[in-house]
Length: 279
Image (tube, rainbow, N blue to C red; front, side, top):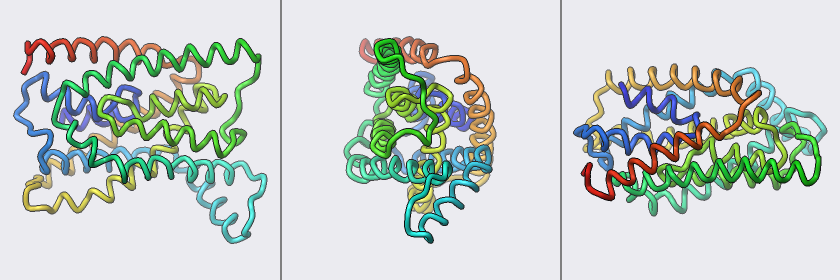
């Protein structure tokens, strides 16, 4: 249940849910085999709860977006409709992370059971956010240009954000952190970058969860139904509260506090594992 709450918070906060799911059991010596099918199956249910929470939170936006996409397909051409443009930006942004997931997931899965790399990548995640904030300020100071709404960015920029989101395949690199940084660098403000990141994450997390559901029924999974159901609910409720908080937070704040958190936790954890203080 603690892992479920942790998933709901860290999936949307830019602090890497996968990194924390690996590090916390290792730091606290929980008897969890993080590379086992049982653990991965349980994590699938937690992700499904997070995806449902995002769908519920952005339900009005998704109704408009899906409707606009269907109309554009039936019409056979694009229009200047705002929701249609956002919908196709989400499609364009989802394709890169889907391809990266297909081709790279098996390569990086070996890292899931090792806390050392997760700590190192969490530290790197901090510098990604610091560098993104610094570069954005430098760009705006040099060109004195206003921020754009989501529908004003190009499809190429939407794909760039999708590629950045794919970095979350590495345990310790945050999906929301990397995609928000990419959003900032294509001239979105923090609030718009966060909303685009969360909208973009919804189909990715949902699709990944659905594709992984068969693992719940594999002989080695041994997932207890009541634990999985309660965990999924807890993850969903926590994720809903997290996205409600973050969409308000990014109206007036930036990524740096999360960067400092990742730097402290990641570097400390890496030192503890590297020096074998914790094994």
